[in-house]
Image: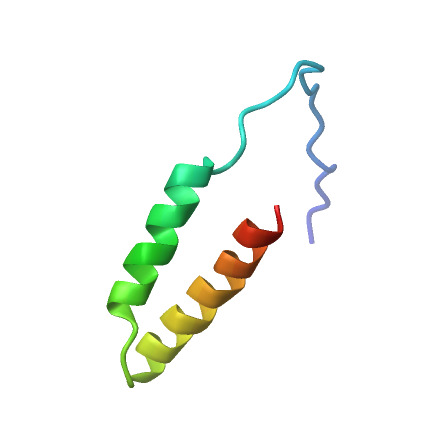
Length: 59
């Protein structure tokens, strides 16, 4: 088995952009709720939207 060293790099010290903006996160919640239904995937979409929504309101 070959052994690889862990990746290394330098990270900028200046502030980085967030992974999502607040507007994008709200849009994601809205779209997830649109997909929510009684199917397993729909239930998962509803749960994820709820989890994200709680985090948005807490911030």
